[in-house]
Length: 152
Image 1 (cartoon, rainbow, N blue to C red):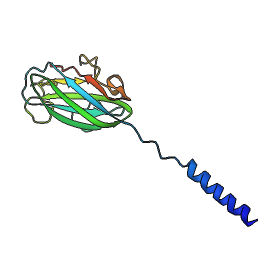
Image 2 (image 1 turned 90 degrees about the vertical axis):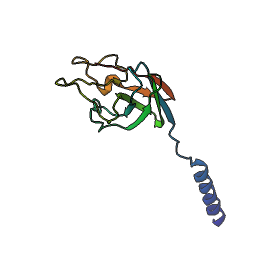
Image 3 (image 1 turned 135 degrees about the horizontal axis):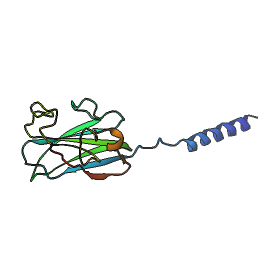
Image 4 (image 1 turned 180 degrees about the horizontal axis):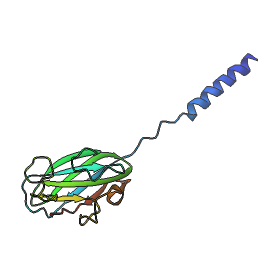
């Protein structure tokens, strides 16, 4: 009887050891965002990355997932976000010409004075307001996207 219990215990331990699997490592990817045709090379480009519905528009940069700033060279700018888990994301950019960190508005008109851009948008207006659903795209590999800069 002792031999049977001992064999059963050893067998149970072996099954436990072989059935143990390490947790799946979540894959992480990079997202490179390129913007071209800036109207000049003054200032910087501010990039904001969003990962949930209702997060954009985000004029005061309060609901972003990650953000970054990149220099401008030859009227172009590029930034890469690394270590992103698989998911849906959207990007907004600001050509912050005076480097004050906010979207400056035209005098007496609630329109941006500096260039802005949203992923998947060619234009922005009263009938084409940004939202996460339209701006979002899937990240399940390392990718590069282009975001169009819009001057109003």
